[in-house]
Image 1 (cartoon, rainbow, N blue to C red):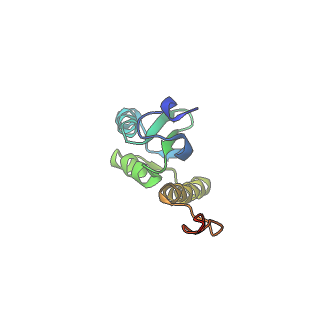
Image 2: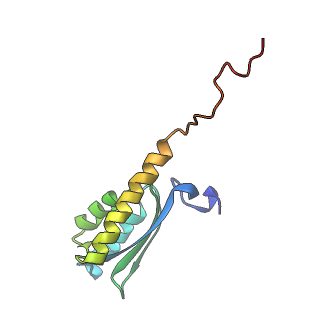
Image 3: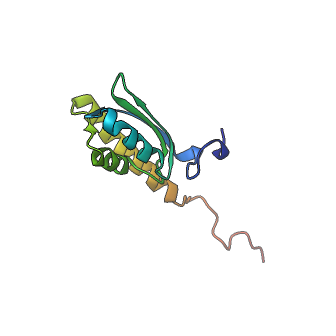
Length: 122
């Protein structure tokens, strides 16, 4: 796939996928919640599984992070499910999101690079 196969603001290199269980999601707040998440800059895909009460997200971690998505979830009266496994995944996802964001802005260097004057012969 290329960057043209994704929405605006999503680069293939920084694309991450997330699965989280949610609580307090009902018919009243689900549509508004998913609509707002779907319009966030950097989101590629957002799907809610009603049977399992879980959300599947694909987004560019250099433009968006899980904290921003959780704010939208809480704004609509829902929350991340309160169990050990969901919290473990949530913390791991946040760590990886920060790592992707840091690496997207990092300029690589090498100590094996020739100095700028090394290519000039006298």
